[in-house]
Amino acid sequence: MTKRAWLSIVAPFAVYAGYWLTWVAVPGDNPVRASIHRLFGDYSYEVIVETSYILIIIAVVAWLRGGLSASFDDLGLSKSPVQPFLFVFVATLPALIGFYVTGQMSRGYSGREFVVHCITNPFFEELMFRGLLFGQLQRRAGWNFWPSAIIPAILFASEHLHQEHSLAGIGGVLAVTALGALIFSYFFKRFGWNLWVAYFLHALLNTYWTIFTTANTALGGVYENIFRFGSIALAFALVAAAARFSGLRLLVPPAPKPAMA
Image (cartoon, rainbow, N blue to C red; front, top):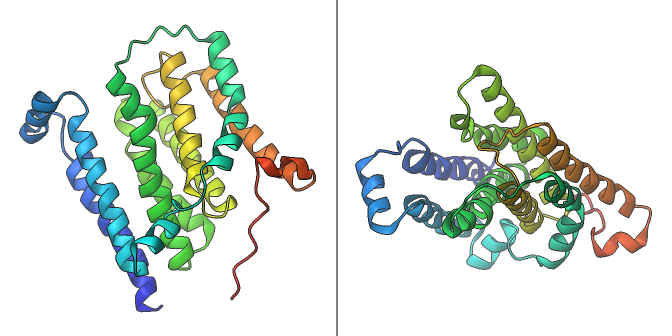
């Protein structure tokens, strides 16, 4: 394995380790974290950490790839967001309609909570787990799809385990979030390494979940999961249908050609 390939493995995990130490491993009553919340309000520590690591991720990939432009390209940020948004909006209509019809819109949430849960968190998580970890492991380190997608998926899922306390609940959250991470990785690659498709899937599903449900965890109930996975099923169906119907190319790009050896 070349030195560049080794760096493409070590650097992403080093960045994640730093993030884990400054966010995941820091308890809510940590004095620094509590002081920042008192000064700047709820979620301020989370926003500071995530913003810092967005900049760190971009800088690290720029160092690995030799420039800021190459960094944005490698992370999937330089591609147009228009087609991914159209695709995701159509694909998630089952969730939007289902949640609207059955939801009570009774959960109270602040504007700051909405921005963090539905806009900034999804962007950071997709940049970290799909753009950096999955992207570098598969595209630059030369790993196969499954190991390069599964390892970030497990790391991503593990961050949600605090939401449940029973063994069954923990297993459910782990399964749902890890499966979602694998699906986001697939669409990131299928759309030609365009991170916006994974981001919009994550962000819109989070948005509908926040507005229309009272679920306090990623696991949710029966109806929530029917609507959520119904949207994912439609997304896969649109990709499959686009191979036969050229009219769907507005939503789905042609399958990327295999990389030359």
